[in-house]
Length: 227
Image (tube, rainbow, N blue to C red):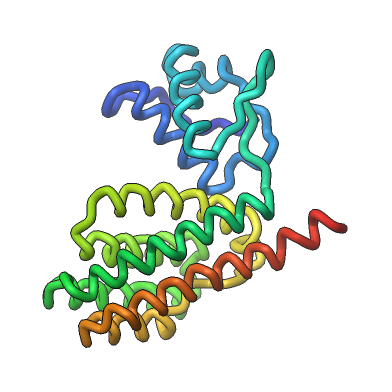
């Protein structure tokens, strides 16, 4: 099994650090669906106790990243079309809510920063040395910035979790073939709506934007299930 981390953890609390390390390994696709997670091996790699790893895995199971199997090692969540649909539908409506609220509350400085973050995505897309991972990271930063402009902290935390689960699917299914690469031109529509304080337009854009991601993932996943 591939290691989640190359050196013992020595930052934050050990349990929080183990949780974050395992979560990123799953989100970034370093561990595949249905892959068994050997608790003792992970504990050794991270320099923590088995109990610390077990607690981190329980937390990840509660978030939908891991399945706990009685009397067996935990496994990474499988690529499930029904799960994809559920997560993306939830996220689409909640991102629409955040965008609507952001249109009413975003400041001029925040709007300027959002424009800058979108230009970072544009630059990475045209840079021959840019990677899909770097583009996706910049895209997530852009979307996170819009959520935070809504000034709804509970909503932002919930959406961060849903976005992480979507990222797991994207990293496994879309990024290897560079499908559905983030598009800064499309984002400009959202930025124009925010600048105009058009909450309805911002909400419609965001909902359709997220559902487009869902369709891209399902277009790859469903043929695998039936093939």
